[in-house]
Image (cartoon, rainbow, N blue to C red):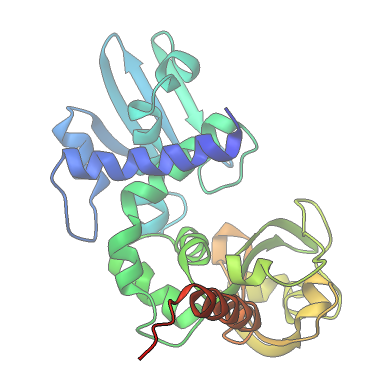
Length: 294
């Protein structure tokens, strides 16, 4: 089974848990779900660097510790949901914690381990189920403002919400996480992917020099103070390709997390492709519409 399919199924499993637990409203409370399954959840303020949470096992009893060194409720809730992913996803307990002990996790899409990635995607499905999340979208200005409104409704981290937003939006959106001059990851919406001959920003590649993000990250104090910057930029400067199009670049520092979130957005990109598809569909309907003599 491909990793992409595994991640998709992990999201679906998260949503299935909501159905089984008869939880239909946002925000979903992962602490409540843990309590229903007799899983004790406690904060761990002195977690090792980079460790978001831990799953503990003693026989058939389980507990969750979550890092509280980053004072962000959304991140902490996501970390607990991530550990619930290890608990609920098939094969995870046998892999990450086959015997009594502790499994340390790295939630927040920062790990290359497929089991950690599956747990992240489980958390996305659990905390931001697709159908109710889509109803939140489009109520505010496209981009960071709309993402923050969804974050507040779901009580999730800004980064996780931005990624879910890019997955589900019909508009052209790119979500980029960076540390200094280095790209951690880049997520593109389907509309943004419609641009021809894009340069895919891979983990470890450099933040393009002409961008607002590069200027912002040059002063790390802006990141730590969670400051913001906004600019208009040609998408060519970020993603290359063959089609020039201006997009909004919104940049926000993530404080003690030490990283920067960038959101690129445009309502124009992708519309030409949709229009062409619409024309093709109209032609098809026209060709297959019966002509009746009067």
